[in-house]
Length: 480
Image 1 (cartoon, one colour):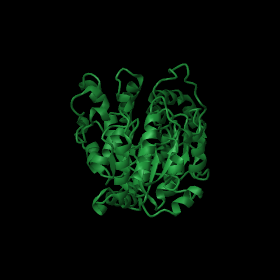
Image 2 (cartoon, helix red, strand yellow):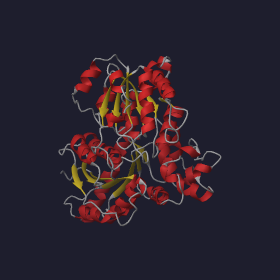
Image 3 (cartoon, helix red, strand yellow):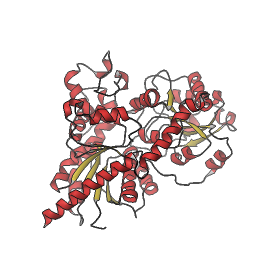
Image 4 (cartoon, helix red, strand yellow):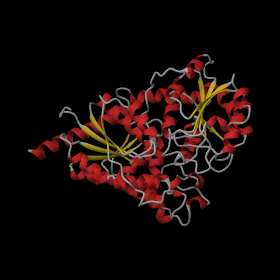
């Protein structure tokens, strides 16, 4: 590892939805911005998908990956505690292991970059005279809410979901009470207090990295950078460095043989993310809606849940019941010439990159959202948990690349007739260049431009590199 390079240490919280963006950030720093990178991975014990992601997304030649010794939180949280609570406690308890690992490194990192669940580790960077950044693998609206929540906590009375008016964030789109992120659903729950803490600690960093780009949310970004925002407390720079997404793997299978035979932009890809599950009733309605629409489809099918919509967060990739056995009687036979059902998992980036894909019925996780936009694929927004309700509103009302159901899927079962209508609408899109398909293709080119040499995101990375090199000089001077 060359001492002339800035050395970035990245800390990822558990779950494939957090791990993938951190891995890809590391890849980007190495391949395009001359960094050496060490990635600290906090595993959750229960997610086989994390190992799969490490094998498929990262070349050992690019980054040094260190698995931090797992921590036992069984005596600290209830096994049924919210996912946010579990992750927050894991990240708190792993700090001694992170400190020990950094201390034992021969080449001390220049900068520590934590995902937003890892803000309690920021003081460790101070101990080793490192810069410290928080990485949000999400959008600017979510970042603005996260920073603003400690202020809302002081002025809003009662539960956020019971408010009569939208929650106002200076300079940003207001948030409807039914759209608030999961940690804000119950103000006496531990996950709410963890979220408040993250919002406050983010501002103690040397900068905020966001997985978006200037042109996608310019209004919200302007508000975050405004000296008047929150009374000017956001004194750290905000760097939109996205879109950071996974690369196409070039995987070949029967799935792609089938896709090769379909007309251009004629197939709907249906997937609810690594942690999202549907109820049996909703799964049945989706099946009937797809069949009635007579649109071609590829559906990644998982067994239904009887728990929360995020029930698979820590068990993604784990085998179990045959998910196809839960589909309506005769569905596979009746749709065999229309679409494909894929159990558990599909290579999503490769599927979305295929020219036959014309729409994506998505849970609106930000990673999936960026993968859809960067491949020019419009979406049917189907939010389930976390910040996905905010994402769905952003995609449909502000960015204009998605349609959605009249009711929130997380609140009520969406009926087959509405699913049929949305499936037809997303593929047929009679507005052409003026519709969502034209808009998403514009943003695809905008994203490519942002990451190209001299683009807005490329320049943001260059600013980070400059800060790190200044830190290296300071470290050398101190050592002498």
